[in-house]
Image (tube, rainbow, N blue to C red; front, top):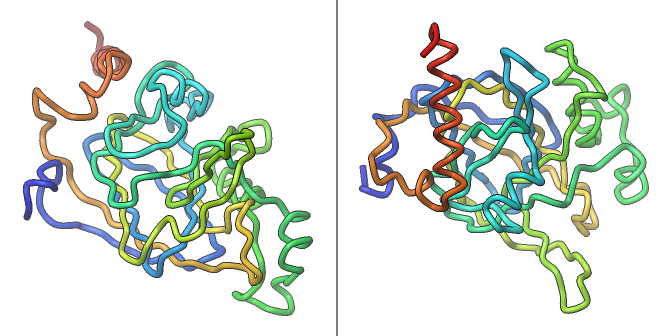
Length: 250
């Protein structure tokens, strides 16, 4: 394997395909890598993170952005919890821009833009939305509306013009583009493949996702994500303290 993937230890031990307009969830243990692959191009993957041992700890979009002085996510960025710890690091990324501010679609938006298709009539060709998809997955873990947070959208790009208006960039992700997430703590991952709420497509876009799981290689002393900024170095220290205390104290 190319040095570019030195953060992986061996080949994928599991993979699956999630169809477009669907949802899923799983708990990923520390020291594993989740690879997301846009199979056809133009995918959108809305995602949220929670600490499975304490779901009150969850992904914090504002802290993730401000502490790394960024509007987008790409390789080198870390995804923070609201307790200053790092859920995962973006160790690989062929796409280069992932949305952090666009939010998620809801039933009314999908109906207005693409019409309505219910399960009773259309079965697996029905139109799901991101908001309800998140709630369905959260309910599996005893969580609900009060536990929703601002999500991120892998493979989607929202840019601004000179007047500060937000625009959805079509063609941001190509077929085969991927992003690799190395998990720095055990994490409950909630995600869906529903369309981005700002996607202007005429037809409801159902873009599938392939995901793969790897064991992570040991983190190097000069790890790119850890040393991308001083805030990330402090985040890794917070994680180390958390794991040390969780394993029986200092």
